Image (cartoon, rainbow, N blue to C red):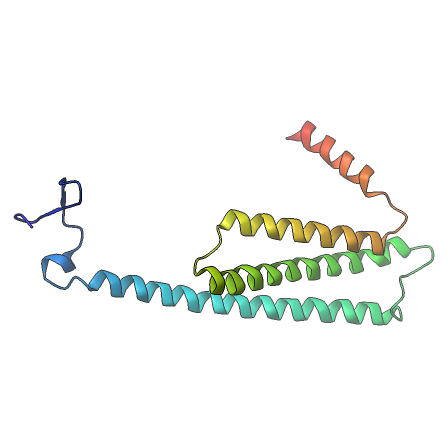
Amino acid sequence: MDGGMVHNDHGLLRARVTQGIQTGDHHAGVRQRRDQSQKQGMANGGAQASQALATIVVGLGLYFYLSYFQFQLPVGMHANWERLPILILAALLGYFAARTLNAALFDFVLRLRRHYEAPTLVRNIFTLLAFTILFVITFRFVYPTYDLGALFTTSAIFGVIIG
């Protein structure tokens, strides 16, 4: 050290960054980062608990709505409108299932095996693909007579025109 400056590996000089180094307490920054990491971990635990609660509420809502129709898809004059809540609740349940699978795969398995966190982009793409697959399966189950190809083509054309 030369008069308040620190040499790096290339011999270049840089100023001291923290007050902790100047006072000799060089572990102050390390403790601060560790405390922030622990707080963030506790916040993620609260988010996971609220996600689990939301999954339970949506699953119960879907269960009770289907039990109203004796676990069969509605038929009759207003069947399409009566099936819409089933599609919405099942899509929400699929989204929560995709998020839970994402958390299980990337937070638990990958972190234990590789000891590092997966990039956010990879996690988001995985969630998007998993939700899309679950939504297509749900839509085909709830509305078997509708063609999704025509719906996606129309949506793409509107997206190009508007966007």
